[in-house]
Length: 292
Image (cartoon, rainbow, N blue to C red; front, top):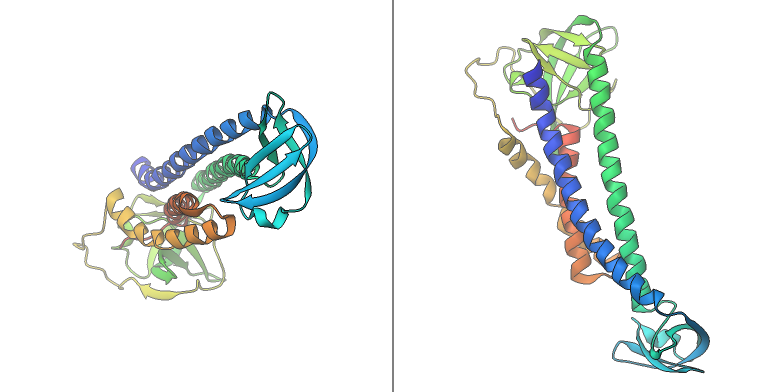
């Protein structure tokens, strides 16, 4: 039972570690950017009302009683002729910022990146912990014998294993992949603990979701009534990751959408793509992708 639990956890722990590492790197760079921007803004202690008089080469020219400053401002032509509060360095009035300037936006964006990275890590750890606790709790329940069929269902880019459980109310239980599933006869008598954990030939197979009373959507493939016992079932983390790699396909498109919405260009695209790829691997591990 310990070996089966380690096998079930290894995939999830690896995918979670990838997400945590990626978010740590992204959060670190965002924090460094935020700290630098915050330091620059904190030196701008003076406040005056100024006028935006022109825009050229990605910067607006702002005139205020203490001096004149050129301030980087994306699409600054839309603020020409308007008044704005100017934050400036009293010792160097040419160092200034106004609301909506590039420095202000980049600092806010960097802080948002830190917040996002922390939120993703907390969500991933919480979801994994809840799944683990529910599985352990169910594994300690008294076993009951049930007739089940193992099926595979492809929905979108993911293939998952399910146990079709007979009874007064037929229901389906998604489970994490284990090689013992490949040679499971259809149907077969197995032990169920807590209605969520199956014990098959002494191997504990853990749930990858809650039981449902409607047939899972997707293309179905049933186990043979008498599988060849010599069938070589896929094993190992590398095999599992090759299967999960299909969920990396949407990552560049997610990054492209984010860069377009956020206006962060190549850096935003690369960052969002890497985070989306890491979350894709984690989602496959959480949902229980099947490499068989």
